[in-house]
Length: 111
Image 1 (cartoon, rainbow, N blue to C red):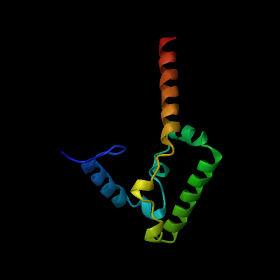
Image 2: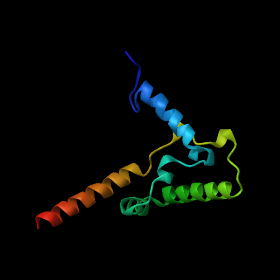
Image 3: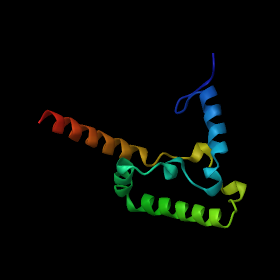
């Protein structure tokens, strides 16, 4: 039986996810997964709802990544965002926004 990591699912998916995460390259700029989401209306609203500290940390990571990209450099390897440390900080806010939007659409459809 394959080993299992409670938070991340079967070990094979965790290993594949870690490989894909490292190949994506955004971690070399110190970005988190949620920093790279396409900003549709739901994501923009979730970002607007972030606590000030999370919002400022997100902006700092993005500004640093833009600076590194313009200078065609990356962070030293010890400063890369690690797969295990990448927190989906936007996910709870995004789920809330999506649920509210779906509820609003359902209400508008029925009234």
